[in-house]
Image (cartoon, rainbow, N blue to C red; front, side, top):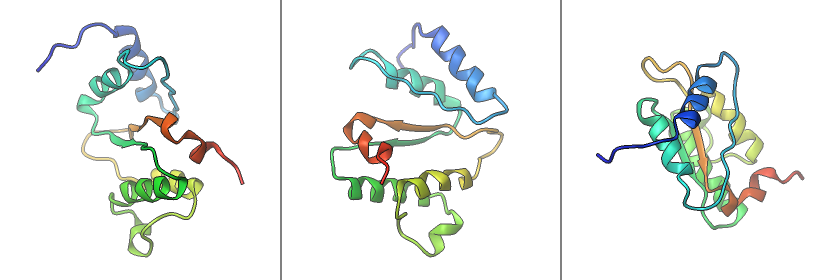
Length: 124
């Protein structure tokens, strides 16, 4: 395994947000190839995170792929639907993802949002 060097401040910040008693949203952005994903991956080593990476596709397929990921956690909705009809429904369903073992908080990583960011941010 390759040694992870640096990013102590960033890892400390992420840990603080993880231990918070409130729901937290952390947005990590920056130039390409500076270690954003690697830092988050290192932080998540002992946290059993949910990862979803956006791809270059249309809004419908992006939502379908995201729905499959969320519904794969055997949510109550998975008994009667195969995908969510909106991003809002899919994101709200994340609260039903069960926590595993000693993990007290869910870590959800939505990567490469720039590939299809408007799909989530757009309002009808």
